[in-house]
Length: 152
Image (cartoon, rainbow, N blue to C red; front, side, top):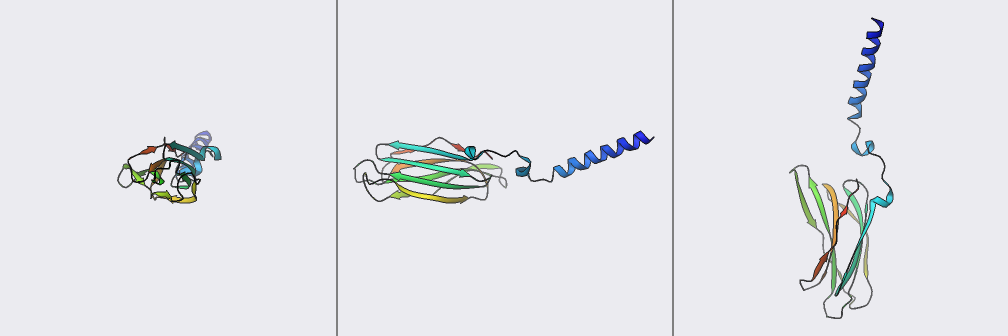
């Protein structure tokens, strides 16, 4: 009889522990990721624009974004760059794309890159990843990078 009571107590403790584990935030339960995996960079260079973006993912919802773009063709068209966020809406159960504002290099041809550093991104929904897009302003000449996936 004593063995059955102990077994019942152990079973109850395990069940209670499992129930409590379910209340721990998912982020705390996940193993820590290296800082290297949380920081990613993509470069885009072509005739007319040369840009890059570095993203430091902070968690499932937030990131810090740094970008720069240079005008590398003397054609009287400025170079521009923007970030494209891929997000997931739990409320609507659908993925969607958010396109950031254009950042324009107004310095002119071969005057170097114009930076936008450590711009915070907190879209409210789960952040699945980013791409960066560079264009020659006023034309249809654009390139988009490969995905920078959120490791969280």
